[in-house]
Length: 549
Image (cartoon, rainbow, N blue to C red; front, side, top):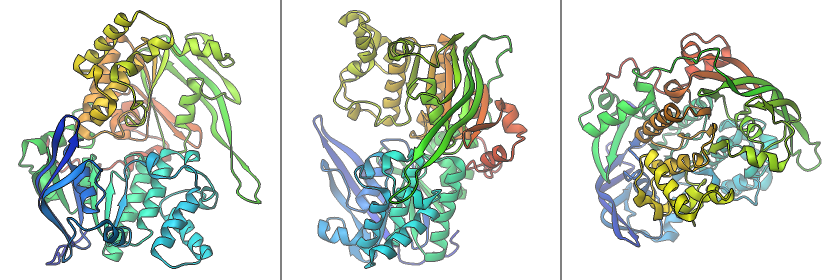
């Protein structure tokens, strides 16, 4: 990390105020925020959803939403005041001087163009290169960003890549212009631990070798702790604490900072995994020798390739148990979830649910089964239709199965919101009016509407900040205890597994390479790949020196 600091900041923010204009009036997002970043320095901006992190980072590059307005203060890039710079001049600044890695790859990549086309376009926007040279550089950037088979991925469309791979494409695009300052807005929240480490190692090497500064906007305090020279803690639009990262971790002054550290899985050694269930517990789901193959596009003039996403997979899931399915992006976790829920058909193998073979069920039979098996998706921003009210979203499954009267459905929605710690006042709100954590609570309520036996949780907390993440995990545990729910918990984040899962199954290349009780996997892993995953957890090396808060 940087040991000497230049006297002139690369970018400085002085007393910045910002508002969002909504139907309910003006909402203050920034309240006199100060920030300085020096060349070659890495600064972590941490805080909960709604704290003002993204507003501040987007203000630096002139990408605030249309209903947002800067109402006071200044932003300077070197010696230039860019607070109210015309968009024409801001476009000259973006990419070549200030790069941005956006948070959500789902909406940041154009679905009608291949990733190769979009990366070449970004390269040629900053460098006068012929297409052939730009393509060669694009392939190199994809490789640096940790994408396997760059030549194949170059010809794929965004929907053909996993969420983690799409995020890596955004990272490649952001570094294409070789900026002086890189704003990384949750750059690795969708990535598994080993790839996250590889990407962050790469970004850190860029800072060291090229003198690039980085503003790392993150809800992951473990990542901030390992990767930043300085830490800036925001709460309700204000900076409540700032200083060298090591000082804040060892001796946080503000109560809010202490609360964030207490909620971070990597720093909280008081969390203990639940004991495995008795071997005599009834099996709810039995997966036997499951196999699923997909065809990859071969590109122009190339033969298409087939890849086994799930390769001879077998596991049992007991009633009332949480089984965590962990592994890197592309390991087959999400494909397994889709096979379990009948959203994909296996090429071979069998699925048994509550003693009944469901492998070859027809559409109507699968529809009836889905009353007993529901899913909580990864992204609370994309999984809820923005046109519907919360009441409509929660009661939609009841409408689909014609269950109850309208009054009964509304009462059910209110009861479910209460179960996930939201008041009935939320029923008439739209998803856009809720925070990320509140949206995920709504998604959980919706998944529980039909009183399922099995809930498949596909990365349910990866998009949430640490305090909300802890609340949602505690909520899932409470609901399991109350209703004997069974969870298939799919995640790339081993740090959260320890709090919830009875057992862990580790997947690699479509196979389970190790499975067992959670404590056993964490304390005594046997497979080299499991050891690699555990070793890549951010904050592992810092947990011993961070006191309990």
